[in-house]
Length: 193
Image 1 (cartoon, rainbow, N blue to C red):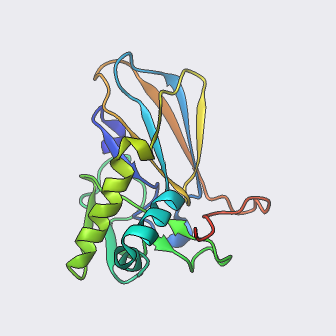
Image 2 (cartoon, one colour):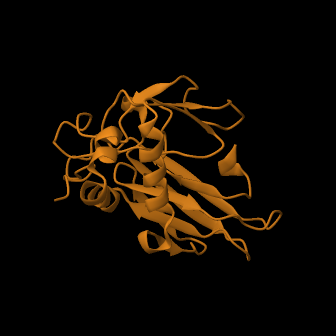
Image 3 (cartoon, helix red, strand yellow):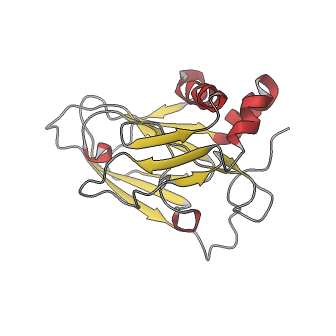
């Protein structure tokens, strides 16, 4: 399970493998002990990525908004992994699930995932989005200090972690919340112009 390893944990939203109804809307990470080397947190905006594609490659964006183009499933099930292993067809940028017109971002690309992408042009679209998220100018890069908590809107941003020194004692606690019942919060993001 990549989240329990000291290797890098690439940009993703939590619960990408789960059916929509089970995907957490809030992800919290609390630092108990940081690693001396590495273990930096990165976040990137789904709205900024959407805006970028809308202006630079609208055909790629159209594919990323199609719920029939992508099927996401775990490559294998291991100890401590959450969610099922079955494939879930999803749009990367979904306008239907939240029911308020906002867009819900879901994204994953690492050794834990198996993506089924149809048609071939979808591979290029996904690669363009991955490239956007991985460019440093599109990231907020920081290192959580002990007792700090990062709270992410899991419907709007992707998050990642850089590799850290194995055996460093680094400890982060993760909590995922469904966010239902919090009526004051608006999930996802309005479609950028």
